[in-house]
Image (cartoon, rainbow, N blue to C red; front, side, top):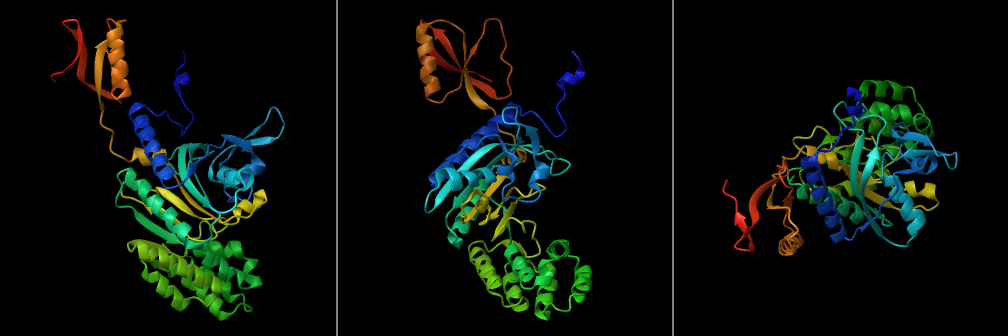
Length: 387
């Protein structure tokens, strides 16, 4: 057997027992949390036609998608890099409900390239989405549920980072000369390249000065909740900007310890309202990302307000403390009906019972045997194991 038979593709790895147990336990806890909050579970397929996967989505999604040819139809299909578009399709096309719909999900996604040098290409994505309600209350519930998600995992010191790409969008939409140069302007603001931005804007004589001042102010509008008031003072009085700042203010009232960066417009072509991320000590990237994306469902023939969040469950688990071995009961393998009845009762009660095969040792990192089911005076009894 060649050594290469053991190898996996780069940035692909097995999940071994301790991590797998922790991941599965957390998955169950989180789906129970979402269900108790009124979210219904859906399970989209691993592959879809690419036109469905990419419909109305971010520009980077096709680059993350592994594309195949469907042997039945001859059409191109993709291995999903993100479950959110699929859930949007389910709400818009399959459920087709009126009013508010809350959906949650958990499944494997695959990226053609890792997001960074220590990332994986196979992720376990879990998340929750609210469809059919445009009010700030939906955003507040999603942000609150994202916080609860991390608390279930034992993370109580997560930092909330807020932004609102609608502010940049309103400035760009205020003049045709800016709309035609949106990509270049976005790059300058996102990279906080103030000098390059100023030189570029000086070439656009037809753009009002207050709009230019607003664009030049954005790269410096980052910090705590005080940024909201600063933005009101230095940004032009546009209705879209005022609405965006009001939304940010309502979130800031609930979460006083947060950071705001109005130049963070990474979701400019996708998010339509508040977008957010949650960070925690011990993880180099954001643990949770989410936000509002009201226009996406239009690609499926039905425009619906939408907001939600998702996270890579595997990245979350990898940063947590190693799970402690579970206590277990060992017993010999027999055909004794009385023993088998007791084993069944113990397992139904949630106890781990391992039947040892004759002349073998049980090697495991997942369990520690603290009790033994033994035959004593013709009675099967549980006895403690002295360490």
